[in-house]
Image 1 (cartoon, helix red, strand yellow):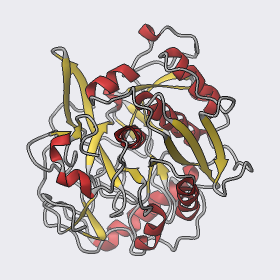
Image 2 (image 1 turned 90 degrees about the vertical axis):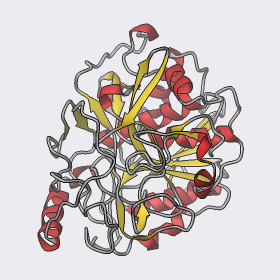
Image 3 (image 1 turned 60 degrees about the horizontal axis):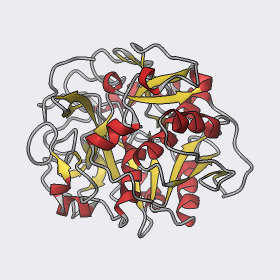
Length: 411
């Protein structure tokens, strides 16, 4: 990954609207393998009202594929689990695997030999009261992850987090209708699911977890899964996926608006605003690079973070301090850089891996909401900025929003 510090905001990068739409549509078609077919109308990518300091593509030098040095398969030193851009009306997972850390297939690997950030690191870096009971956290992902429970067992055993199984009632897996007619498996999304469950456990070992598997990666199916998750009364719902914005996206907001339940969404890893992070009803989680430093932690903005001004969503009245004239699609941030990534275990993907992407932050922050005991709407965070550590500068920052967690007082 580039070591240079990303700018807090960049001058405009202009791409003709018609060309941008055609390029994104072509790339989306090539990358539809990780997405499902959906009934949402075809997206009108780009265009619309934008803020004055962010381009439709995100940042200068960015193309339909993302930022300089990025390809459909990933970014320098990392590989996307869901490759290419999502097709219109569908979502892609936001997981990036560090290619510089060799996987280890040994499920009994001693913790000291497991690369990547461990639960204790995350708890320390974000001052999480992980001893709290937390309550129920729901994780929504597409397709079935057959090894989800067994992978979670390996992860929790390695780090001494205790059992969380269907047998003891800590873990439950259901389909988007709340039943057990699980969808077809998908290896890329299964990697995402493994990470999501493990990040909830890392932040909140005493939380109970329900995994709701959507039939496909269509936003209609994912939205139905979110509604099912909400019907179970969780403290928070995690969504680690992104879709390209389109003019009709506000029709999907109903799925992410559940009174008394915190809903988190990854901001994406392509450098520009995405949905559902742009929804006014979710806490959009951007990305950072997190490193140990002088007995503490050092954190900087991660340049591949999805961010910017929504093409279609007006500024929520609670969002303040941004340079956008529309919804700025990041509210706060957590580690996402694969080169400073987290340990995760997925037997089917090779065992122990180092993972990043804004996939890490959505479940981590969802679990932190549960730890707070009073999960609130995102506007609460803007009224309590002292609950966050600034990342990349004082005040609101386009990539990191209000900053990273400093305990749970801002949630």
